[in-house]
Length: 150
Image (cartoon, rainbow, N blue to C red; front, side):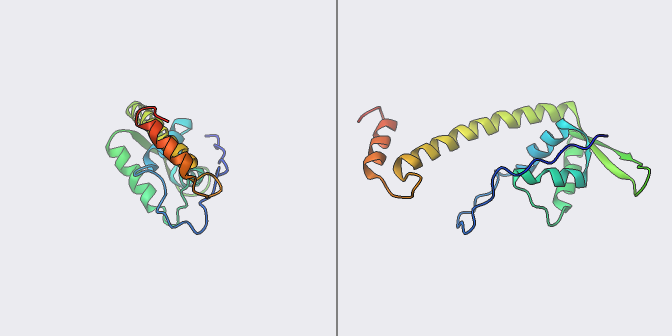
């Protein structure tokens, strides 16, 4: 099996943020499905490849627990790989049901992105990138959203 490169994280969490933020609930599942659609992999490799999606695993047990549940659900399969050196490793692969679920997740995330884009657009219209409130722009944006008035 060829190693799949690990991408650099696109952005880092802003320091000092008081919001709870983070990924959508159960975001690890579509991330694992996506990574397995690229290539079958063992757990530690998947953990390493999850970093660009904002996952820093101090304890990998949650990923292994998720992979086992996904296997019980029939969306991934696994088999033992016996390397030339070192211990045997369980290698996970995506099933056809897993590909269907990945497609569904992608559509859901697209819809969520549209909602987030609308939020950020209104935020920028109201507050702006510099953090200064712009009441004149906020009122205009609000009126547009309730019937196209200005």
